[in-house]
Image 1 (cartoon, helix red, strand yellow):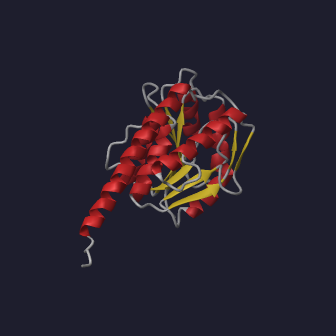
Image 2: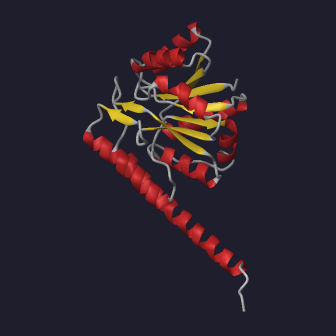
Image 3: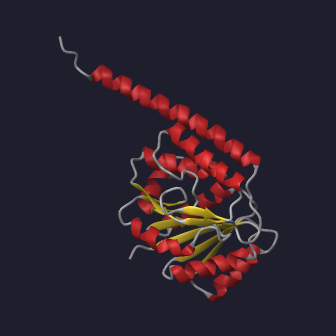
Length: 252
């Protein structure tokens, strides 16, 4: 069976982490859980170490300070590739991603390079999320779809399964995105590599414990970066089309 590792970044998730981890390991008992803690002042790292001491499926990667979601995931991805894992999963520690959806996502990875747990495909949805958050998510995905020309219904989704082969190809180039736009950037890079992307419906829930790290600064960064990527992508498409026209013989 493919070796699977679940990357779970944490920052001040002391109460939520044990609950989420227990659900995950019950739903998918053969996975390895890697908690990536950014020096949480509330002691999340120590909680993770206590979990690892009694369950050899749990591991902990300590980072000295809060450096952003993208940097945490990238650190975990490089570790996973170095250690020969076949599938790498992104999952939040706050309980918003349904653990019981992971088996279906892993099954879909048999025919895809990237599997996205999607809120916006038929069968997917959101529970207990404020209307303004739903509007931000929907608007962000719609804007990214239009700007980048990529047919993915949930561009900003953070519940994902990557194959090791795709991640190696993506990480061959430097990835510097952080926060909200990290997922858009990774989707864009996967599409540019002609990856097979499959969306599996999930029911996303508002976090049960702790508080959201979303901010207007994170949203602003995503908007600016997505606009720049969109301009670059469209310009590249125009240049390719022009080059193709120049190579096409003219009938006389």
